[in-house]
Image 1 (cartoon, each protein chain N blue to C red):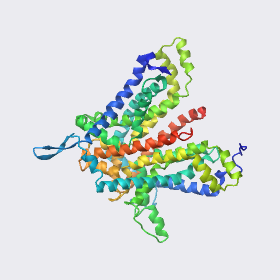
Image 2: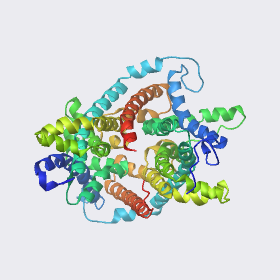
Image 3: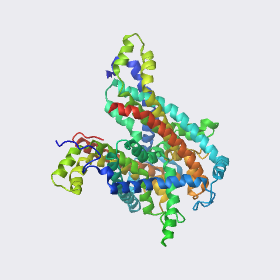
Image 4: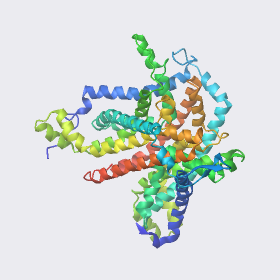
Length: 282
Length: 290
């Protein structure tokens, strides 16, 4: 085998080629320009949002005072919070199961657990819609008082979130040194004590990353919510959808910016938490 | 790893909640959908009922999908998704390649920059594109300065394909990055040393060696494109409908659930077909899996 050239020299040094840099810049420009203009124009005084006319926060106050938008945002946050709690618990247990035990048909079980991740969202949405209607859950839930009338949406969100949590937590567990568990048991700790004082602290970064993933997935979901929500239970993306259908307005820009900020913060935290684990493995 | 028999209580504590949830709120709903796809609207007192559905075991819903009207939409969904996937590959390959060959301290940041848009709400990204491409949008304004346009860039296939590429490109970058990063660079050096040009090296060495990543990326992008509903709904016109829109209509406005269910299952079979292909390729890929 040829001796490795150090990066930074020679014919393989593609990173310094001008054409690649230009292409890179062009693609990143295309990727970010729409989002950046969307955010920028949420501060624009111009109603039609084409020309920059001056800085204002008026769009934000208008969006904030829009009662239906506010309700939708609160619904979304409540749903995301409840779905996150449930999905994190269920997903973690699935991760622990797959990590710790051998059992018959394990391959098939894993395959089924991955199904909600791979099947088209729209199929899952209509399947849940039909399930809720045919079991009467759709009608039963509509008349319940406020947070309870969101339960169908929460159930649907947990269904597509928990397999993702399971994947994240399991990848964290892979690096666990099982001797710690054995040592704990040898020293007289019970199954339960070992779980709480050894395994849970070790899983913690994975748990938080998984929970944040579930939170953003739930907060962002449009397609499945679109099918499983009743007319009274509108979430933020569903509300934004109905506004977008009517055309472009700076108010939507403001509302979207708020959602972008929430998800970007959650994502960056989740990635930070996962980063050290990755480098530790390599 | 221990056998489940060694610690049954712990096993069932771990297994029960997830299994219950998956069965009750995923597998059973899919079962409902499956049976519904073999149903038809019930006829009560000689009248076709709007709400009642008879699970009669008919195949008519599946056959209806092959009616020329729907066949055209299915065909359109396939070529639009294929074209969008190809464009994703064409833009994602240089990105992934560039990141792999970038200075190490830049790599995490560049990767984050590629993945970040993927975390931003699909709806919001689509909306951002509307603002860019509409008649009074930025692209038309820029074209206006040089005396061109305005062009109708929304509500057509162009908008749908652009939207799909914009939305799903990160899916393509990640598997490509993973394989290019693991590529043994001495092969490239050997090829260049032996007199191949950069282009020849790329086509004959780099591309074949990163094929598993290419195939993974193609499938990861093609599947969501095929099932997309929001992008053609917001960016497409009346004739740029895809399967997702037809399914949505059966459940929301047309109220023909059995037909919608049959279309959903056809879409799922197509998805499983694509995943099976990916599995086949990854099995034959000499141990480099993505």
